[in-house]
Image (cartoon, rainbow, N blue to C red; front, side):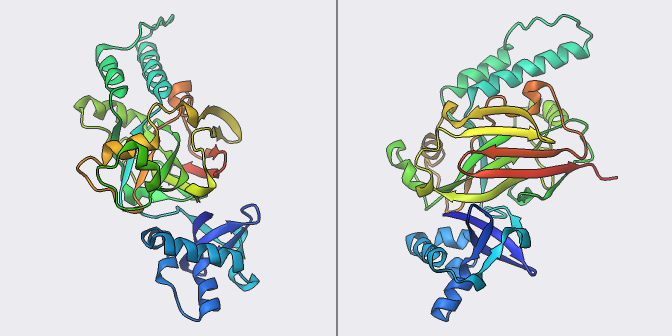
Length: 327
């Protein structure tokens, strides 16, 4: 299924895309009409995940048997992030190409700031190389601000302290059930489904704070900074999440593309690593990190107020947001 959270007539509901994502089934409304009683597990997407296979079966039944009265046009609803907010968010670093190219772009930008006309890249610094060496040894991640999650078509508000804003082309998975000390070979059983993720970033703030070696803070933490959607594609609908074309466009112009098959660490690796002596709960989100060529920093191009950013991932759809600097 292609699950969504939507708002209609002032109420937030759980739904599912049908007819090429042009219409939305109101899952709880179908169940109420067919059985004459509400189903709390269909009240929202997090409850659906927490409800396990029985809730998923109810949702599937609702999609298959939906009467026209319980189906809405996509144009008549407001989509939100699939889970807004999720119980927890972790954004991981899984694409080595992005890591290397981002470092190279940073070196080039610093050289230009010093007035260097001919830039000859000398390769990673000692500090950058230590991070690259660690990257291939274990997954790296930080905990993102779950309360800044927004959905497709929602506006991203440019943080007042930043002059250099960027997007990040990512996707990610939602945890299906409680997971602790999960072996890699069993980890796929703990994935409920996938969505697109845009980790908007204040690059100037991030460059300063990372010197402190505590991970990003105000470079990532600002209201509306984590865009997710447009839908949650259940794992059974995506048997191979590691061959997805990923494209970023700004104002309709392609700025970058990559493929999920270039992930050094798969979601199964992330689940196995993060769940060591720690329980992951249903609905938690793990971001893939930025695919190679998936941000403006790598191309040394940055956003301006009013830009519309589209992230497209094959099999999931298009996540679209406009970034605006408030007066």
